[in-house]
Length: 112
Image 1: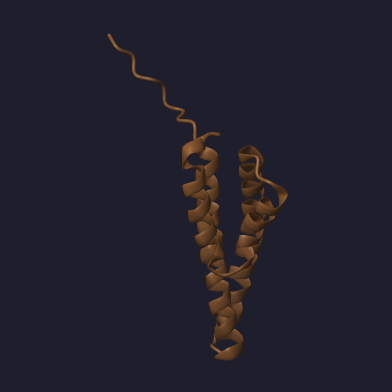
Image 2: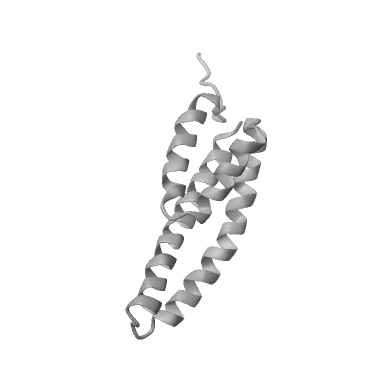
């Protein structure tokens, strides 16, 4: 497996996680605290999270298929983008697990 597959998963896991936390905070501001402007911010963050979660699903599925995960583990990783802060913990665990399986794409040094 190439390092780029894991890297793009990691980036989207963090982006999805941050947007989900922002969405939760904006929902609290909108409904719980009745903050002015929270409705517009909530709408923007919800749309961004929704679209980027779809990209996260594609990248996580690609990673899982290349890592040959069982279906249950694949679903666990895919659902991590729907639970606030879960994406951070799942990403860290997956990264540690897959570090040994990554193929270094850099060419071997040539000795003269």
